[in-house]
Image (cartoon, rainbow, N blue to C red; front, side, top):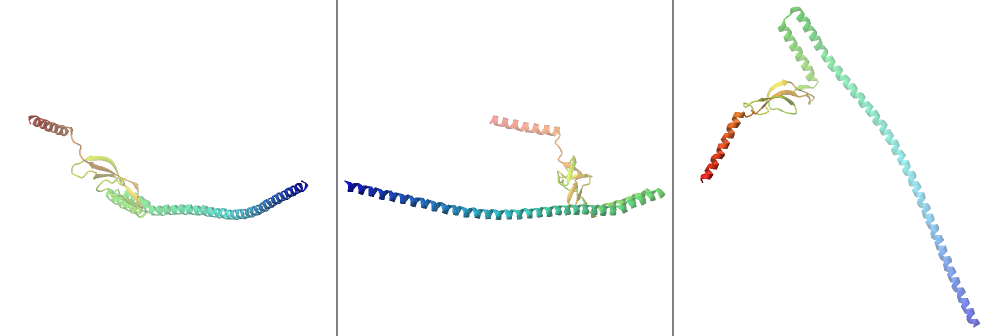
Length: 226
């Protein structure tokens, strides 16, 4: 019995030793894996920090570039505004210089009329000044709109309608006020009188209605006899 008991105890001790060894192996593996994971995380964290630093540097470059572009655009806007103002002022100055001789011509015409009181000469002089004035405006881009022919809603404004049966409908029959374009853009439409078809008179409509009624009555009578 004693030998059996000793053998049993020895087996139990070996079993416990084996279990303990396995436990230690597992613990060592866990520790090693944990250390490897920590090392991996540390490396990943390092890489992320380096990436963040790189992205922050790129962001600063973009922000600096944006500030430079914004400043350049603001300067460009100021330059364009100045150029527009200078161009407008230059255009106005050119027109004023061209108009001064017209003013001088008017003064001379009035002065001559006070001396000789000749209406025919005065009228002729005013007409020449008017032609000169129109020529100056045409040179600047003003053009009179052609108001002959058919009505065009983009260039004409119909102020009056005229019933006509001798011309095609919507034909312009009279120009009430001239219209103008400036460099191709309408700044004032021509005001015109437009032809429209004559309305039927009440007596004519009554006669037509009676004829229609008689036709219908005759048709009913013929059908009734049939």
